[in-house]
Length: 361
Image 1 (cartoon, one colour):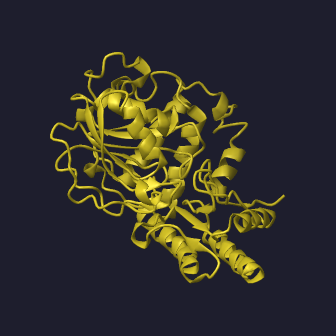
Image 2 (cartoon, one colour):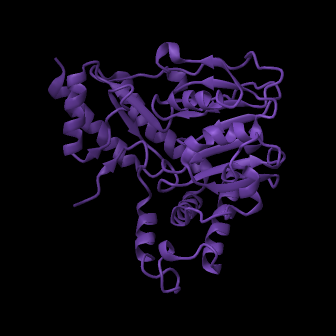
Image 3 (cartoon, helix red, strand yellow):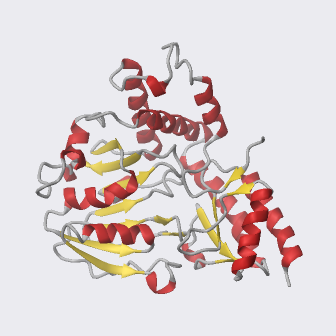
């Protein structure tokens, strides 16, 4: 069976050469006589893997020395609690709700203090990013929270909110490493890796050192304290060792491709192929306000649920898989992360044109 074009929102497509390398090393990693899957996380060989992964990520993102890089577990969803537990000193935080995941993070923060929803795009099914240039930021807010790229709804913050000096916390799960980023604009930038970087099971947290303190909310479990993980180099307990190893390989692949500038160019080119077609198609249409469109996740619909289902079925049979939209919105969604080659998008558009011809009434 040949490989399909996998448009899944996550776990998602990985670079083929990374998979090939991992396959080659499956039985014997660099002469150790064992797989990384079987390796003690306390071994010299594994220590080199995690240290190199961190060094490569720091280089790719130009992460300043006063930020810690943590490889954690629990997915992005566990951060919804970990962030308020560690950062809500005044028990106040402001949330900008632009999708399902920001909404869940907001609801979780409500368990720990006063979470204020200071802007939202829920009124139009999260199809746009609200104007965040002059928001009612709370005087005593510990931080302002965003989900920078909305996987389900296909929107992206092109300009970061004006937080009026408050710490910005951003979930970047679905745009991680898709373009250059100025880490200094954030207090915390974090994401699950299963979209652009690696297999499910790892969440990377990049956090400014002054935010890592002993002063956490009472009752915060030891495992949910940033300080514990920072002080132990992400090795307080057994880390998701194999997942981190694959992430490390993806970092090397991105470096080899030319880094984040090149990734951005590639991603813009890919997205343009699909958006240009959606803008001229008589059958399919995009669901997001143009200026807020994500480069990573492209939702679209025909306007007819039966036709949507027919399209997904026929596309799958033709080797374009995981195009069904999220259950909360229906329709279709093509996730075109770093590892999706441009020909995958071009072939998808060819298939869509053919489907349009056959099905346009």
